Amino acid sequence: MTVFILVAGVFTGAQVWQETAARLAATGSEVHAVPLTGVDPDRPAASADVDLETHIADVIAVIDTVGAAAGREIVLVGHDYGIHPVLAAADRRPQRISRIVCLDCGLPHPGVPALAAVPDQGLRAQLADQVQRGEDKGALAPPARDGWERWGSTDGVCGAALDRLAALAVPQPLGTLLQPLRLTGAVSSVPTTGVLCTRNGASIDLVQRLVDFGDPAMAALTDPQVTFFELPTGHWPMLSCPGALADVLLRAAAGEGRRLRPAGADGPPAHLRPFPLDVPEPPRDRKGHVDLYIPDAEGPRPAVVFVHGGPVPAGARPTPRDWPTLVGHARLAAAEGMVGATLDHRLHDVADYTRAAADVAAAVDLVRADPRVDADRVALWFFSGGGLLTADWLTEPPAWLRCLAASYPVLAPLPGWGLTGSRFHPVRAVAHAGRLPIVLLRAGRETPEIAATVEAFVVAARSSGAHLELVDVPHGHHGFETLDAPEEVRPALRHAMRSVVTHLSD
Image (cartoon, rainbow, N blue to C red; front, side, top):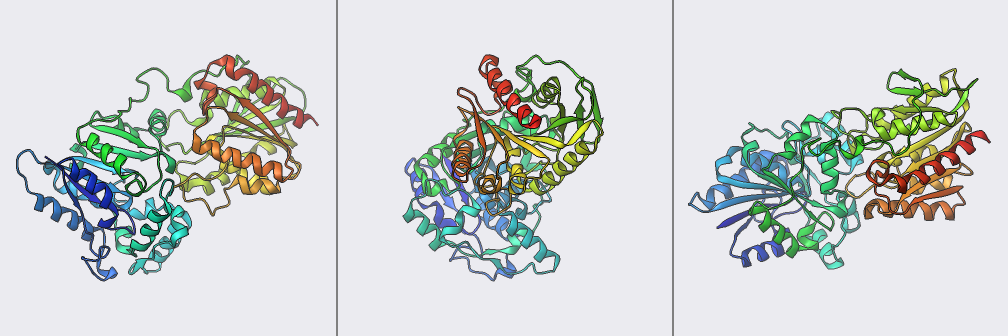
């Protein structure tokens, strides 16, 4: 018999699992939704007395109650914050656990508190300040009914279910978020399944791309014991699609799911495949975190600065400025008589946008200060997740910025990124762009979540009178330069580059 032990996320207790638990039980499985101390009504406690260790003990108590009878396979399921007590409990009872399921959450690292996974970055900073002031007791109030989006996408959660979520929510003891996760390493032997909710911004393909970047820390996800599933819903699948979630949990318990391939197993990963245009190789000048590709032309020349996307793991090798797409674009710019510039910035996590924006600004200053560059004629070209970095330049375009281009960009924070109230929101910023020329390359087969941000940007740009030019790749995917047939991509790349060059030459 399979025994499911379910552990809820922040602000929620055992009741949130009601429908999913009933469906699992109907298949003959044994199901235990763990009542968490200080959260569930039948486990009252003062918030100051509750921390992560308290909830680890709650999970271990259920594991021990289930018993070790032959044929009883225990599957631990942790949603959101719940993965922290789940991992720690499995680390202390590894022989008893047949599988861990991470439900729409990352795999936390030892020594890191759950606070690091709080999606609302403003709240994360506020709590960190409280800790520094010694204010680490008490509880965090749950959001109001219309505030749950700051904690994850509510896609698929009907009005009645959202009412129920808000009604059942309780304050989260701060100690559960602030106490670091302590692991011995024994949990690494336990098979693991990740269930990703795509409407919350995650997908298996995205995780595969992170593996393909070559960061050694991601290599463990390619272990044959690690599997993945997707659910086309938001962050609370136990409310939006309990039947589909129950089915996925049963399949995970049976060892099913998609497995990731090791980086380079099937040849070069997508981001390292050749650029689709054959462009000359001009001289390259490396300056700190910036590379300049110098054209064969007299006098200071206009420049195009290419800003990579992300997040890209810190251990990725090669770094983005050496990726064929960035190098190819810079060489193409040089072939047009422009200085092409690539750079590395530190967008390693969705919490890094402020740091990445500072890196980009410093790189632009370095490029403009170079005597081979006409400092009054510069264009910026952004890619993918780097699209959010356009917001600063759209809000207050400097006189020297003659054009802003973006390829398959993310143009509004995705659900679960915790950036909704931040300055990194191009859809809002474009209203201030004035007559700044904007060249936007759209992928016709973009992922729905990113495509929605692009469409919102186009609507906002047109309503505000922004100078927007659309260049479509009708059959292109996200990252089309190295993913799609060259004949599909070349016309759009040439068209977009010529448009940027024209604006720089005006």
